[in-house]
Length: 546
Image (cartoon, rainbow, N blue to C red):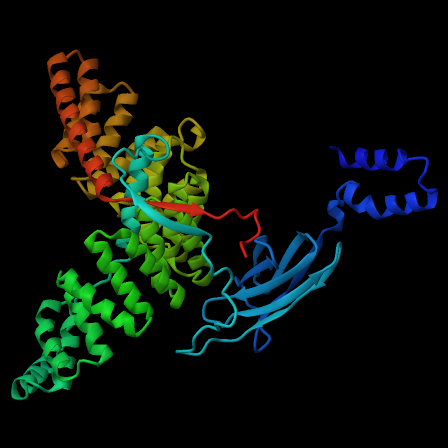
């Protein structure tokens, strides 16, 4: 019912028996409920300045305004002068948080906003001292995840959101994201220290210190299998030593003794609810194929200690198992707490892509690239998105152009930018010069003659120009570099057909068909092996359950 019309109807149809004064009073009381909504001019606003303890402004601090007893919230960042603004905010009671990496969080727990009020709220962030823990008396923004992972399901028939190319790109980005979290083993070992500890352990086999220190040294240098006997000796001497027991569980995990490692870690966890233990158990469970238990331990690790690595691994696990919406939530929190983490931004971009938000994906990956413009990894992510789109965004192509300007002797930089320009030829023909594209591809090939993708793209360009003899040579060179390149076989068949060589066209189509079938079976097997999380997103419009 129209509220305004209902209000006038109520006031104009009073029974004749009702006293006039009493009826008018009732209309006045009910007017706010049946009258038109308040105008947007009544919206409140908050502004202020974020400073450090010396009074200097802090740029790029994250502000979050959370409405009390509601899930409604707003975000902003401070500018170079430390200023921030929240405009058009509904009246109510809010909590205001401010955070920046390297500083302790600050908050105003209760801000009362009246309709139309313009409030000023300044905050001071103090430098976080080395080893100082973040305050735990209040949540760091929204600590409670707005999703629940309830189970797993077989993904054999999973086709992904959209065409197969998009599904392949989604899976590829997920795997690339996970690889960013894999630890680098094999720290440099001091031979003199190793020999000294070995001699001490040989002289006194039951000695705890020499065995534990040698075992720990071997674990950190990537020689976990060698470390196990020494850690076991130390454990026999002091079975209650937590550090040695943890190192023994870690060594068994890295040596592939997952069942043994899981048992040892579980025993420790029964004594101490520790973030590193949960993270270790998560890694072990993932290796054992128990992904559901793994994600729960990753979550608990991040809740106990919301470090960059714990949040990244939690988000990456969700992304790997086709849970993009929860992954977006986790990586978003990671980005709020660690805005300078490139891999958090890459994970967030990959999660947005898996969720179908391609522009947001490009934005986040571009932000990761801006943190270190010389790092090739963000450009690799952008190139994968570029391959999956018919027309890439101008922002994406501009980042690839920057990569080329920074690293002109990179074959990939030349190739990525050439493909971007090629795909812009219809949407922005003024930016797509075939001669420039061909020059870029030839540069890539000159730098790396085995760059199969560059040969393939050059053949596509020549086919578009109806230069089929040149295209055939390009496709053949692509296949010399990579005989499993499906698209090269298909396009070579089309080029042979255009030149009237039907026998060669049939042979290439046959090879294409075989390779396509094999790769489809491989993808199906991979999807079958990587189980999909079943998750539930909470309804933000409903009040929390009491």
